[in-house]
Length: 225
Image 1 (cartoon, one colour):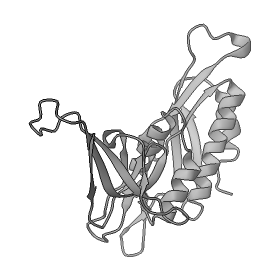
Image 2 (tube, helix red, strand yellow):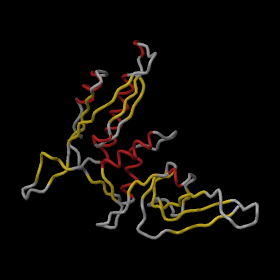
Image 3 (cartoon, helix red, strand yellow):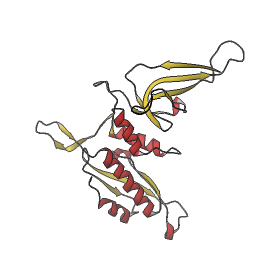
Image 4 (tube, helix red, strand yellow):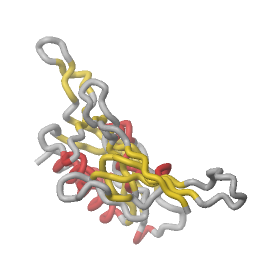
């Protein structure tokens, strides 16, 4: 077995790698010996080496192939610092929730803050400053797609719920109506915690004629505390 560490140059992208989030500072490349002795490289694997910031020493090896990682924050050409937008963050949250052991919204947001990632909010077409420049959107209305699997019994009906990322925030929940309510309410509370200075409200609606009571209950607490 052969290996080589390729150090990357700053500034570093912030990546999601196997449940870890950190600056991608180097890559470990491994490949088996060439059985024919020609020195050719085949069957190579690449693993990111991270700097997770704060309490973690730089140099953590993420035990996942580089191709299975996702860029959380690329480097802004304007500032030279890691930056992204709300829609891309929604894609990262969706990717996390699809993992066998998701790390969660709060963890992702916490690490992004530690690693000095900025998140740009979309412009509000209804609001402009005195000089005519656009103002960021502070209120969001999230459309939920609601599906009830075939064979779900009325007295214990199950649901699968997910949001449209184009709304700005990603939500996903499954289970009974009460479980869906608790999951969506908890996820919204995590977003409020991350963006308490940038949010006024997150409301929900659906076009699927399901879970109206759940949505009404959620919208009773739509404003950021």
